Amino acid sequence: MYVGNLKLYNYRNYTSVDIDFSKSINIIYGNNAQGKTNILEAIYLFATGRSHRTSKEKELIRFGQDFANIKLSFLNEDQLNCGEMILSQNQKKKIKINEVPINKIGELMGFFNAVMFSPEDLNLIKEGPSQRRRFLDICISQMRPAYFYNLQQYIKVLDQRNNLLKKINKNKSLYETLFIWDEKLIEYGSKIILYRVSFINKLKEVARKIHENITRDMEDLDIEYMPNVRIENAAQISDIKKIFKESLNKNISREIDMGITLTGPHRDDINFKINSVTVKNFGSQGQQRTVVLSLKMAEMEFMKEDKGEYPVLLLDDIMSELDIHRQDYIIRNISDKQVIITCTDIDRFNINNHTAVYKIENGNVLKGEH
Image (cartoon, rainbow, N blue to C red; front, side, top):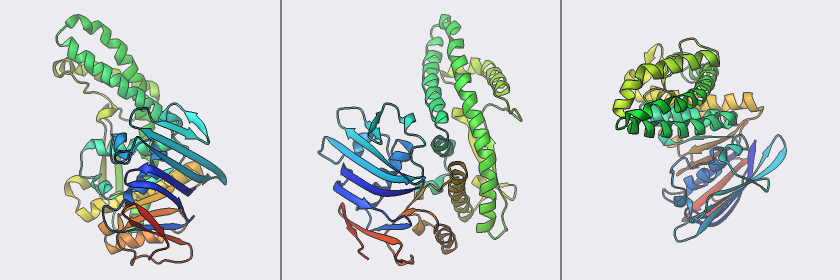
């Protein structure tokens, strides 16, 4: 899979941009605050349906303009595909896949696959559980659109249940209606848990091998899924539903008192261990960064195994955040993939005939400038 062309109109700081990409390495360089990341963000929109930097889509529209238009052409299994998004100040976002309008973001999932690696991702280990759940959700949704659907439904039910819990605290007669939302929460939540179990079991084996390679067999990486619903070794959806229901019943008094749902995959976490030691609490910054690098490279390999071809790799100014050893590992392992890299300095790269170079200055793209 590789991106052929990106067109931006009134997107962020760009008035109008038309970029053709190389199938191999693409380097986008320039000073800070020139708009390099905006290009990667626009591409990544077609993988996840949302910006990785903001939940306010109006921020993506160029200041003072009514709408923005983004078009992406890419090849998948030798088939040319085109995606288009129109963002408006006054209307709902419009999305087209190969000229056909779609009504739900879920229909976009799996259409285009990309892995984003940015400096913010280096905080994946030491930040709170929500960041690690987000990593899971983005990875699984790209490969399993049904997961994204269940996740959306779960969040809607969770909001409804939380609202009801707050009302029950003041009106006990509403307690009898709680079971309706419990059943839906269990239905969608159990499927999410099962997806996560399967994904992490496969991901950790791939990540372990990559981590051994990066550390020259000195470190053994383990990824431990820590579900809020203690499913132990439950492998069947029926078993998970049973345990989920028992957990809800056990916590109901506290939930009513607090007015919030305490049970479910919205409170899951992941624990990373190196040589049986928890990385978050005892790992060095270098070890934490190596774990994240292993995860991102494993995510790519996992998608390759699942989809039959590599996703597009987006590296957003990440090289300056890694030491020489980790930089070298990335450079050695991207030759067979399409990679789009942003940076302020291109001297560290070996530029050849297969490398496309773009200089960004104040929202202008200058091809071949280096």
